[in-house]
Length: 230
Length: 230
DNA sequence: ACCTGAACACCGTTCAAGT
DNA sequence: ACCTGAACACCGTTCAAGT
Image (cartoon, rainbow over all chains, first blue to last red; front, side, top):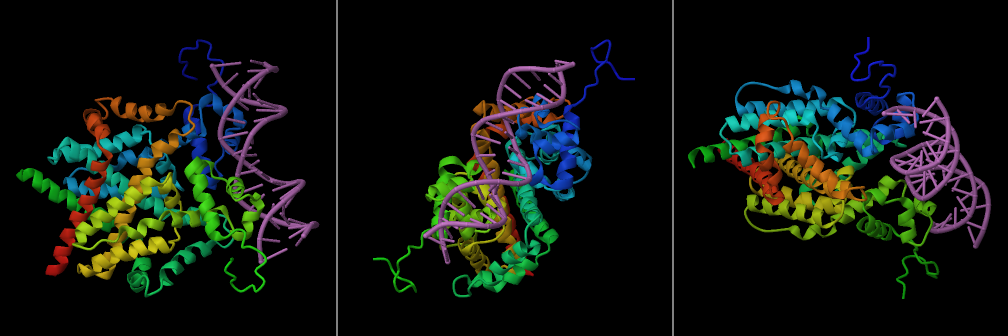
């Protein structure tokens, strides 16, 4: 039954694998959010005590690294064929959509720096498009990082209200407090903010996101033209 | 001596003010970093016990809100006169520089959503430039948020290594592990990452930052032209 | 009005000890 | 090799009680 690796008798089950650890972490994350994710709870999810985790993982940090990469698991399906600028735009949209689908995903990603295989795959795809479009190696690398930075930064801010409101005394209070700060801006000190408070607040998040993406890609188009001429 | 506000006898000193709280928080932040910033330590900085803080502040969250805004205190001096695109670029550079000057500043800012007076001032200035340049109210609002998102997201990633390395067993290990992940990318699975690993890693952070800023501003220039025609 | 003592219910991490 | 018990040194927050 069990595929024996190197142990002929295969008596002992692997018990906790790194995959199981990531899965358990994801379960806790989905159910309770990042702030409530503790080693003790992840251990309990596996029917084990907290101290046991430290055999498989050096740190809570390392557990979160595992989590971060497994959050990108189905980001691999995002590959598309077509014009480079259209592809980049779709990738940005899909990446945001994907982060949105997992609770606190942006916060988990933002905390880490080691790229797992799934992130490498996404980066590789984008780099391929840009190289094929004629961008220099340096500019292709810079462009992918610029877009990744923007998308992560955007979703991070976007998901903040949700996680900030969790278990707060008055849930909608934080949100409306932020809105009030804009609306209550004194006209003499902050004339533009006061005049445009409604425009700032009423903005649809999808529109706002696409505005930034389109500015970046427009800028990249201009650069592509300049490189083609030079 | 003491400027009596409304208390005629002026016997009792104000003891802990909100400003003093923010200053104490900043001191702890600078000395020990965000991960080590606890209510108990901030209280100790003021010569007081942790429980006392809850009279002046509802939450640790609220204390961090105070901190976030006071981090932007001297961002007010960033005002410039000149062409809107040059101003925006300089503002972005100065904002990054300013975040860089304070330990974990990006992480503190990224966690909060309520804008304090100092952030309002910065936003107001940028909005003013864009309105004067002929952008519609909606586009000006979107443009400022796009740039703010990019700068914060960038510095957040930039400051991660520093805070991730604090007190770690092997300090440089995390950094080189991330670098190794890029360099070790299998050529058959991630051909572009493997080929451009050096380009990705060798990038100067200043260049990388300006690349993104210039793409965004180039995109905004194109939009300004389109609006002028339409 | 403002601060304290003491407690509650948690944390991450370590380490001897078990099997 | 892998898991446990028990402890250490912390947390944020609450609340009666002091002044």
